[in-house]
Length: 382
Ligand SMILES: Cc1ncc(COP(=O)(O)O)c(C=O)c1O
Image (cartoon, rainbow, N blue to C red; front, side, top):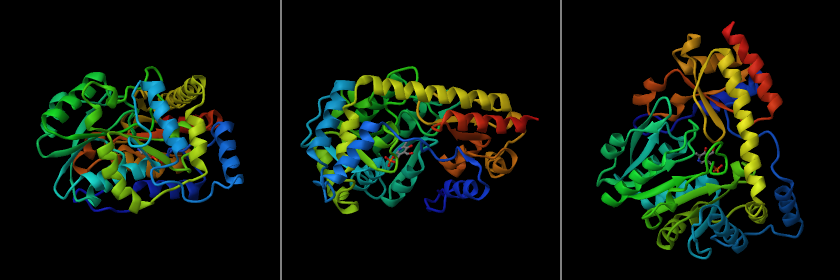
């Protein structure tokens, strides 16, 4: 995204093409290389077989909306009404698109953290909103409270947060979440929270901002089955929030995709009802993968930041003599047979400088793939 809001071909496309062309291990894009739980995959197969192949209802099937409401109650003790306070979407991406397009008018400000998931910038531009950002500060990638206070003003329409966070793997602290709720009240802003990595936290439980006192009535919570059930290609996402906001978002959503993924909706409903052990196991498995890759990167000579959740770890290439992560990422397939993404791809150009030697690596891959990547990356330090 250029600073003037122009949407151009991304570094992600360039890096994926490079992975394809060179046969390098693709730690650039965040998708698992193994299938999710059998119960979920089998439920989709059964649904197709029994003819669940036509348009589902506009808000999503009642079965899935009920499963989402029960999930919010089981994990977070949040009460959600399936008929009016849940909307099923084509992934978190459509949830974000419909939310931003329905709630942001030309010139309205949307505040996000920076670095930010690339779709945020593009969607704010599509809505002709103004994108303001709050930098995440090294080494733990938390925002400074004063930066939040300065960025969130009466011009702010949406405060769009993402915790657990892509690309840094940080989790916003409770103090920060409380401050965001306070500022949203003070400036009459709405909170949009992208929680697609909610079940992939390594050492602490996820705290949805909607569960904080005073938050629910102005918060739109977005999640997706893709990361939790390793089904990123199914694109089943959802929104929970107050009925009036859900209705406003539905007016746009119905003309984006209308509906999607009929046989995948009962499958994700099955997944959301899996026992607690499933959810603790996926986080523990991913934590081990984080450790394998983080140690490998350290041994190769990177400075590695602690990833607390999600699919990604950030590493600084400066100790290896690379001040520019874009240059390193272009050379990495040749040097080490690995593809990664520079953090500057998640930043506005003015800010990219501070993060210029930082690289994002995905660890949502089989352990043997990560071990091979680590062995190959070790060549860099020699
Ligand atoms: C922070 C964040 N939000 C949203 C998405 C998109 O989710 P979905 O595939 O459900 O559209 C991703 C996927 O990488 C993500 O990292």
